[in-house]
Image (tube, rainbow, N blue to C red; front, side, top):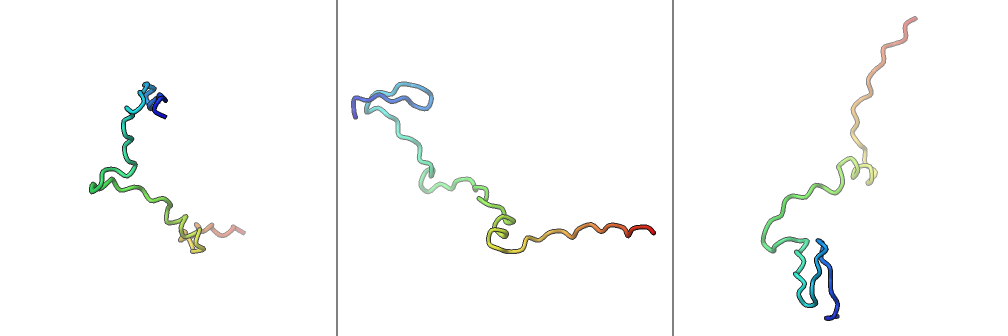
Amino acid sequence: PDDYYYIDEQGNLVEPGRREPAPSPFGIEGERGSAAPPAASQDFLEEATGGEIPRPPAPRRPPPEL
């Protein structure tokens, strides 16, 4: 595979054996990354596990006039 040429993300031709290492998706070891947002909201988790979702009480309608 040394005779293959590669094209990087910017469209540049990269010669064989001269590929730059891709950055790790996990960041640098020992550094703390930014806090990721939660994968699912609490409402989703409650409903998915069969729990009750707290809902505000429905607004009351005035009684019909006679």
